[in-house]
Length: 76
Image 1: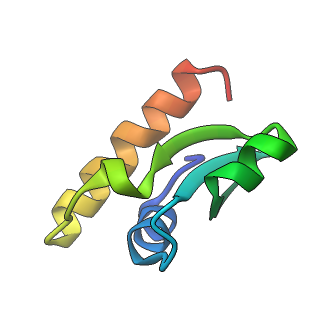
Image 2: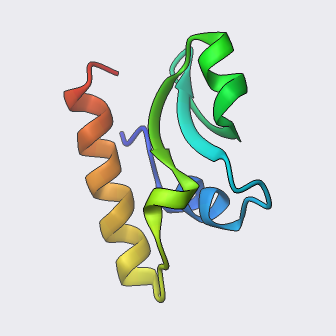
């Protein structure tokens, strides 16, 4: 089972807050402002400003898979 899926990445890209981050909080993947994530001690996986443009579903799936692997490598 993936920690980070296509929908999570889609939510990060669509976030209106430029400081939004995709984070893991108590085993759940959510999008929230980066400063809030840091206050809660959440594991920041990716920041909206670092993701760039995703133009199609294949890229979305590929990015989700890479972020999921990275989250697992970080110990999530």
